[in-house]
Image (cartoon, rainbow, N blue to C red):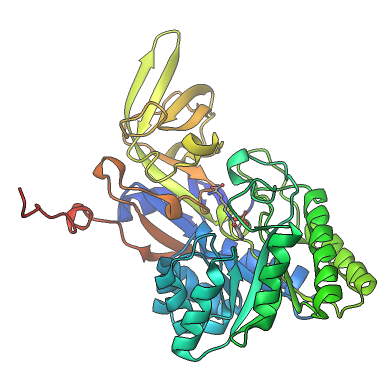
Length: 433
Ligand code: LLP
């Protein structure tokens, strides 16, 4: 166990805070985020990437965990952000996030979102399809601004991860397929436009990756096309965005340092730039999960316990698929502990389920707990900082839990829990009834 998570006096502590005390003070279910862990990952990125390679930038993928307070942390750390919706951009605006450090991604950006991004003056728009260009140009004219354009390619490589989070293979809703008659006209239109500056190429091959071959293969494809752009139009790309996808530890995974992925990528980028005869483009990455996953845990209170003789013991908690859909959606596996019995031997196997009306509402399968586990105990699930809060729902009209930030023994709200009133506040009884 690392020092962000530790057992003291039989209780689980997270970033210096007693989690049982947090559950009592703030209520459950509760997302808890460790500032020290986020800071650690951001400094690894600085050491292994932005300080190491000229012009390198990190654009944190907001979709992993997006709150105004998170943007405040990133703003102070000097990193950039990637947003994929008007809503994420709105939160960034609320945090006063510097516009030039925002990159706007997405496979179907709405005209209203493009308008918002151009008005705010984002640093990059990552184009994902042909029909996007006139929408961007229209907004550029309206605000009299020229936009830096990255073009997202679909490199046609299959990364080994869960099918739902593979994005780089050719049959994908993301990116522009690399067929000459599709890709080159888009590039030409950008080069020819007085409103658009062809800045570079972007790729993202998948998420929760532990191997490097698919990254390198995709980079090769990307650089082949950078060469093609040079020979066809004499244009040189100034930036390459490698995307995100760096894997994290949920249960038994072995987390790899950023340098494991990035050093070989940078070597290849340099070799291929020389070969094509262009100045080496500035590298950008978009890590999401690897910055926040292990910085998060979720606290629940245990309720009903059902021992189905000879079959299974169900231990239910006061949250579930509404605050963590990843188990039902991707068969994701988590680890955790009974926070107030962390010193006891965990020798009984149970299934932890949520309170939602769905048989698939399971959080932990075959999870070991002390046999003394009982109603009122506090369960902590680990590594829930990415795609937990950000994918939360109001299923069964359960409120989205709040998020507390912990740091060296101190704690405070980052997001307050939703209330019942907030869930129904936009409900109206139609006049036509
Ligand atoms: N850049 C782009 C263009 C992306 O589509 C994504 C993730 C990222 C960066 C960040 O990837 P990361 O470093 O977080 O792996 N909800 C799923 C993950 C979906 C990822 C979608 N795109 C999950 O919970 O596993």
